[in-house]
Image (cartoon, rainbow, N blue to C red; front, side, top):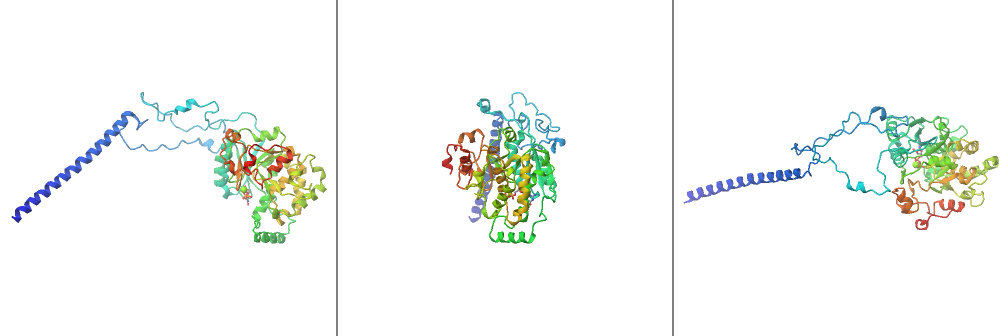
Length: 454
Ligand SMILES: Nc1nc2c(ncn2[C@@H]2O[C@H](COP(=O)(O)OP(=O)(O)O)[C@@H](O)[C@H]2O)c(=O)[nH]1
Ligand SMILES: [Mg+2]
């Protein structure tokens, strides 16, 4: 009995195993069949492999094509002639026509036919009409700034210069390396030019007492004054105050636009600011203004007052003294234009008035015995030696340099210029900004909504 039960158990086990094997093999082929038929269905509807040849039954995507390459003679074009000549694609065959009955690989966006009159079709680098000024962008930078300045260049090019192709001069107290040159040449639409600063323009002048300067740096380090112990920062401030506009490369131009690493431009610049400066007889301009850190310039105003006594002929008649002094010139109120953004006249900076001013300040040694910044140095010069209407506030150039933002007040301006700045970050009407004082000096009405941004 026990033996026959064992046989029955064996037979049952074998039967169950067969059933399981049959079930597994039949169910997998069903799934496969279903996938195949769904694929066929979609293929027939033309919605899964749009653009693929109907004979292709491979489900694996074809390998991506290499990106189009630019002709090498335009890769590092420095002639400034790139605009208007879109780089041609090398040896790239035109797209093959689709077999009749099949749509293109991408279908046109139906709403593109319905764009309103305020929309322009996108074209790459359309050349802005009109003449160009004799002007350049200028950047002082170290090789290590390459990626941060690249971000700035990209913004300036996207928002303005790709349509204008102005030159870009890069200056450095060291040789620019290949990476810096390669990357920045590629990003700029106009000529990119590289200049090394001579030792006579970057370094301690002979009359500076090195020990005294070192003691000051140590004291400022202890007081935790920003850049207080830095030698290179002082050379930089002195260079920007008195020399960049005299570099041999810069001598070729009349106007400059200073660009620093890591800035942002938030709105389209829809006209040529250089041309605006030239046509409206503007010599200096700003987007942000604020109060200087007093401890970096304790004796700057004394030096300025001595200068005005020695050179009264350089003081302009309708100047902006009111903006920088609340007691008719006895004291400086520390208001200054933030000079990491500047569009200005190089010829003004090279004028006798400015050179006399800088030379006077430089002799007093405050670039090294204190930590005079190029912002108050430029600003005081502009406020005293230019009629105030030769200084321009570019409200429509929206700008950021850590930590401040200029975002134009007024929603319509921001929409018209396709701005992407957050108006709540606008520094203009903040208590530490000197813009309201600039408006008051000029008797200008403040823009609608300014109180909400205080
Ligand atoms: N070549 C060179 N450029 C410098 C040096 N120090 C600062 N710069 C440049 O001078 C400008 C101002 O310096 P930055 O560090 O931005 O100063 P901040 O904006 O006052 O914090 C920037 O364009 C820097 O790239 C330096 O030692 N050598
Ligand atoms: Mg900076």
